[in-house]
Structures are given as structure tokens and as C-alpha cells.
Length: 594
Ligand code: HEC
Image 1: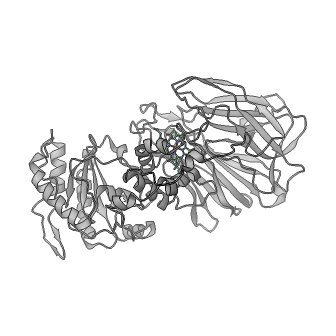
Image 2 (image 1 turned 90 degrees about the horizontal axis):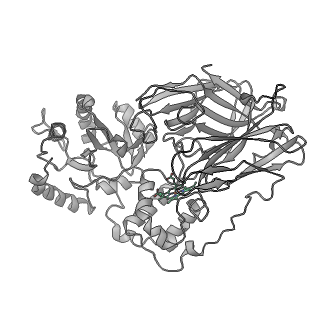
Image 3 (image 1 turned 135 degrees about the horizontal axis):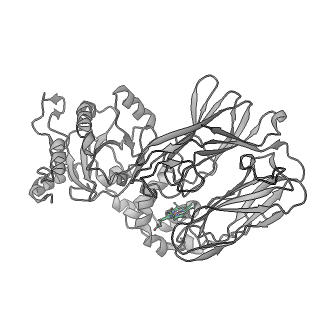
């Protein structure tokens, strides 16, 4: 048992000075840090509670241009190295108003910082921790997620003064005590560093004027209720104030950890028309409102009064409707991917301008990927020649194919539906349907695309970060429309990169926190021209360790496989050829590693 009582006087003393200087509610040693997820200056995703296997998690508060931080960093790095094999995780945390990703990356390059700098751009984490000055360190115990020490790393540095050697090594002493299961003698000290401007810190009273009726309900209507409504995919419906207030703490948690709204692209790369994320200001408003007690405000309840005509088919009555064979989904447990095959009942070739899946039961149907292929002379289906016809993902509105494009659907085609069900607590039978919309005449361009896959992947047991990729060099100019990274339970991060003929590189899409539950197609806001000779690289990283909560078995080396207990590196791209001479080509599969 670590005892903190002996330090209470010291804590109270330093807390008093913290309160005076900031007016904020600082987190004191002994208090728990709620989980959060942040991107670092290189676009990597970091979740605090991922480190439940660490012996300690240490943060130092970073700020560009602060001499004390710069001076403290070499020692911080030494400690990182000294405790590397003792399971201590070292991070930096930047909550500065004036710093951004570019300036932080420049500072990191200039000062050789090789420790991830987590960027708290909403300042919500900094506010919750009660940050006052940079260079302060926090030690968090992963067994309880409580702060066990906050304050200076040691007493070597002062303002414009420094000693050759520190007399007190607060951080190292704390870590040694934790590793030896001994009492932490000093749990808090005053940290010297540069003052941080957190304009919203400690403003609970002002935040109480954020009103549910005026500010919050419209935000939920805009960003959440396509899923969180009666009959929607979300597990609970945002029906009125009472419902939302009841879920308020949970909303704070899912927003801080980036689970909701479900959107996983790094905003630094690309712009996507189906972006579901909240803006920085929306995130701040929502969380401040919850932390202020989720007040209702005056006036009628917009959610209770909200009426939306959720049409059966979002695009209107289809030209052709196909029944997908029903599937009985049990109340609980994991249902693996189901593959259903249906022959095209239409008797002539048609050009398709849109396709829409109408879910039978939105509460259990997680996603559908529709492909079709024409059987060969032997009657067999060659999956490698299969073409995509979109699919269904929760919350996505059905979209027409890009302007002037279409897909030729032959009369003899066979559809394959990859159905992913998630159990909902009650048994249900799903009867979903596919609606197909025809062009009246052949469109100007054939919608095409490519799949980049690598069937030679092998993900070692227990590996936390294993990367593989597939690539392809374009043999003609294309207009890029959308990107879909696909992996399974162990997928951790995924990206698409373009290496242009002149050697420059661009990240087209980065998904730093890949989530198997959301098979999102990222639709570019503007089609992007990729010229002949461009190399497109699709890379995925997997976490096959026990720390990955979704991992069914960390002890297995994982090969390629269609089922979710194996893995896939599968990047689906949709595009059209710029030159009409190339238009006969459809989806092309590039399989690296074959
Ligand atoms: C695209 C559909 C979709 C959108 C948009 C969406 N959610 Fe969700 N939400 C889900 C699904 C599905 C789950 C359950 C599965 C999960 O947690 O991933 C969920 C779970 C949640 C939960 C957790 C419930 C629990 O106890 O596990 C909360 C809270 C939540 N959503 C809040 C929000 C808020 C707030 C927004 C808008 C800012 C939002 N969601 C937008 C689909 C959505």
C-alpha cells in the first residue's frame, strides 16, 4: 500500500498556491485521471488507459519556446531511457493555446525531442488536470489511474538559474518508490515553468449558461441523431432532455476518448465530405456543458419536438430491389462475417448510378459490403474480378456515385454480400434489401477503382505495432474519389500515401485509431487527380498484444484470412480514368507480396 497521508500538508500547501494562480480546479494526488485519447505531433493516437500493463505513466507538460521545458528535456529523456525496461511510459503533453501541430513538430525537430508530444488542442484535458505551468510532471499509477505525484521533475532548474546537480529527484524517487512498492514521500511540489493560458479553466459558473435547448440539442441533432434515434444503429435514442442528461457522463467519456462521433481520420490530412467529427468548438461546448452539470435552459425541448421524415429509401424508390437472405442474430456473443450470394434477377445489362442497402434491423446490422462478379465459363466465381457496389455502414446516408459515372451491372452477375452483425441483447432476424438505381443511358465515365491488398502478411504473436503494406504504380491518370481501409480486430492504424513521380509524398488519408467496428469509406470532398507514375501505398499497422481489447487471441501469429480472427490488409479505392480510352477497366486488384 502506498500511503499519501504523510504528504497531505505539502499537497494542501501547493494546492493552495495552484488555486491562487489559476482559479482552476486542479487534480490533486490521490485523484483519478479519466481516460482520454489524443493525437501526438506526428499524428499517432495515444489513449491513456491503453497502458494498463505499464508500471507507471509519466507526463511532462510541454510548451514551445519555454526555456525551462527545453532545459528539462535532456534529463527527462535520460529518465525515459533509465526506466525503459521497467515498464514506465513517458509522454509529453502540450495544451498551449498558441502552439499547433506544425509549430510543435518544428520545436521537436529543433530540440531532438523523440518522445511523443500529445496535443490537447481543445484544452479539455489540461483543464481537467488543472495545468498551470509547463515543465510540470504527472505520475499516474495504472492500477488505479490516480495521480501519485505532480510537480517538478527535480529541483535543478529555477528561473534563469540552474544547479549543476539536483538535490532532490522527485520524479525518480516517485518511480523508484512505485517500483519497489514503497511509500511515496513527496506527492506534490510546486513546478517551475511557463504559465499556460487556459482561458476556459475553472469557469464552471459561466459554463452553466450553456443551454441544452439553445446550444446542445441542435448540436446533437446535427451530429448524433442519424444513429441515436428510435430504430437507429445507436444503442440509445436521444429523445429528450432527460435522456441526454442521463447519458451526459457517458457522452463526456466517449467524446474524450474519441469513440463518438465515430470518425477516425486524422484531420491534418485530406478533407472528406462524409466527415462525422465534431469541431473543436463543438467538443468544448459539449464537454463544458456536461462538466457544468448539463443544465437545461429555457424554452421548448428541440429533441422532443424534432420530427424527421426518415424515408424508407433515402434515394427514393429503386429501379430494382433484391432480398438478401435472412439471418438469425443471437441475443449475445460474437457473430462472424456472413457471406450471402444472390443472383442478379434483372434480364439485361444496366448502368448503375446508385445502390442502397436498406437494413432489416439497424440494431444488429453493423455493415454490409456489396460486390458482384460474373461467373466464368466453368460457372465459378472469381473473387479477384469482383466489383464493388458500395454497401452500408451505420449512419451513412446513401450517396449517388460521383457525377457522370456509373457501374455496368451485367445480367448474369452474382452478388456477394458481406454482412457483419453485432449482437444487441435480444435475438433478431435480419432481412436486409438492396435497392439499385439505373442510369437512363450509359454515363460519360465508368466508375472504377483498385484494391491494394497483401496476402503475405504475418503478424507476430504479442506484437504491439506490426506494419505491412501494399502498393501500386498508376499506369494512367485517375481522378480519386474515395478510400476505404479494411483490417480486422487487430487493426490499429492505417493510411494511404501517394508518392508522386517527382518524388514528393502526400498522405491521402490517415486513420491513426483504426476501429474494426466502423468500416468507413472516406469520400474526398473534391476528387483528386493522381497522375500516371504515382505510386499509391496502403499501409496498415496491427496490435496483436493483450492490450488491444478487441484482440481475441494475442498468442497466435496471424496470417491473411477473410474471417475476422485472421487479418487482412485491404485498401479499396474508387476512381475513374481521366482518359476515356481507359474506361473499359473496372476494379483492379493489386496484390503485393504474391
Ligand atoms: C454513425 C452512427 C453514430 C453517430 C453519428 C453517433 N453515434 Fe454514438 N453510438 C453509435 C453506436 C453504434 C454505438 C454503440 C457501439 C459503440 O460504442 O461503438 C454508440 C455509442 C454511444 C455511446 C455509448 C453508449 C454506451 O453506454 O456504450 C454514447 C454516449 C454515444 N454513442 C454518444 C454519441 C454522441 C454524443 C454522438 C454525437 C456527437 C454520437 N454518439 C454519434 C452510433 C453513432
